[in-house]
Image (tube, rainbow, N blue to C red; front, side, top):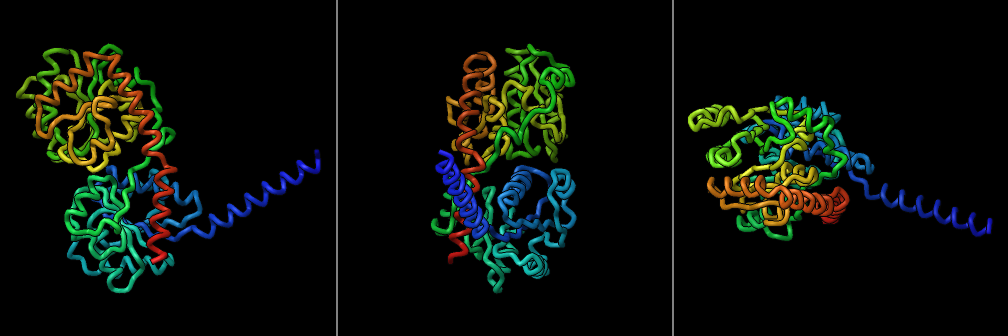
Length: 381
């Protein structure tokens, strides 16, 4: 028996060594290039991506627009960045600077995030630089990506939009955003968070998380508030995010008499704790590609109100994990929120179903397998 056990142990060690060698053989040197104007979902996804891929043995240096406000947040999350003047779509020197960074890091591939980075990476490839992959995380012009070898579309909706603009479908891989529960854990008790905003455990709380802009559906959400408050006068609306629309939204809330029930909380690093303390997540974006906020809410078992547009129907199962409404319909937004606040058992079941679905659909194992496969195909020519 001892001999058999020793043989088994030797086989296990040989198998592990073989697996390690195989993994080492496929590890890549990929320069990540991003040109962000603020810290949002795409930027946070890049942070998590580089950490995960580096842990698997890949080399993932990150080149960022030199004056980006997102740099401090990336550093806060433990990602080392290299700054370069690569911003602006008329900045011809950006091609040279990205190429120099690729040579310096001996990059086999260059992966771009956001349109300006993709624009210049495509030109670098056209001028004889390494192959490039554009990570398309929104609905954008295909013109920024036409010179790139391959594209990663954050949802089927984004892929279909690119195909409609003339990008061959074989040049596109659908790569859903990834997030796992251990990456989005609340660090504060929900009761303490509610107390911070003047709410208790009985207060109905609707939360929204996103840049304060028209396309995120804030006008429709604020137009729906009087309807919700007519049925639940003590309800609160917590608004997490920054943007140029804030002043308009404050004026709208003041005119409609709901301002005292609205909390403008700005950007919060403890978003998980904030989201964990709400009852309903409402982000009626007009055309969301694949919002991390929807995945975050699902992982925390929160039912979601969103629009039936873009990639939202891929992230949210209508009637099962949330409620999808027509774009621009504030009446429907209000009715959906009321339906969830009035039927708490249904809302809880939706939240739990959303959590189970998100754990499977947006796992890192699926993400990494898909991404590594795309790397291999592009480098194989």
